[in-house]
Image (cartoon, rainbow, N blue to C red):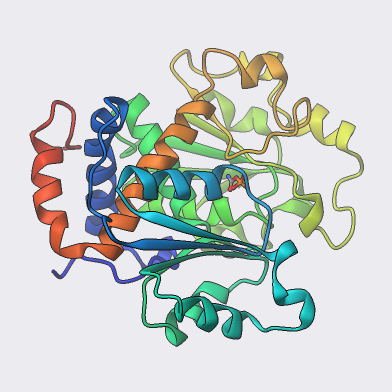
Length: 323
Ligand code: CP
């Protein structure tokens, strides 16, 4: 099982083949989930959602993914836990492990937390977002959505717009898109771009107008006020005026270009409501695909012995395999 994965900590760790297997698996689950099937790969297994930061989409879609695979969940919420009494991350995780779960999904404000847990624990660990570092399942669901709409990301131009410096979503997307042969550019205020974007293997511009006409995909990112140690944009209104996807700016795009946003959206800041809800927007497709990708990841780490058979089922379905 050379291409199987034990943990999912970072998209940077995945090979092209491992990414392709996860996408194929997720794609194959799509019609079965739509039909209401339970695919019992996690029957008798428990997944713990250990969230130290707020989440709507990621936590609920991991829960839904577990249910669709016939498993059960245990949910941990930092605000109602014994963390306030001084218990450490590792002690918390080891105490939960003693209750017998089979997988730990973790979101934490500190980059590297899932990696540390994967070294300490004997069960698979899946990163649901760690600080500025990575959000690998988000990167996978974004690429699944792009390929659903565009056929392939190979040779396509993806423009990531906004707060790149603080974005774990941007980092995971860049790793995956580069491995699959897409061309990536980032754009945002100079204070919200990494000091040397070219190190990431991407092009960059400070003004969206330079990049929009050639883009096949625009991914607008949320302005993350909670991760800025000082205000790095003059004002939200100015950000919106220069970098927001307004209706006027969207007119610069090719007719077939699509718009993604990982959520939650600051409406009227990163995206005008008409753009967020318009025909180019695939934001709710991203959310549905989030369940499929999390099913693929949970099945891969919890039931690796069953994956080959699932891939055969996936690939035998119409549109089930990306070529
Ligand atoms: N995209 C994303 O991570 O959303 P949540 O913070 O709601 O999980």
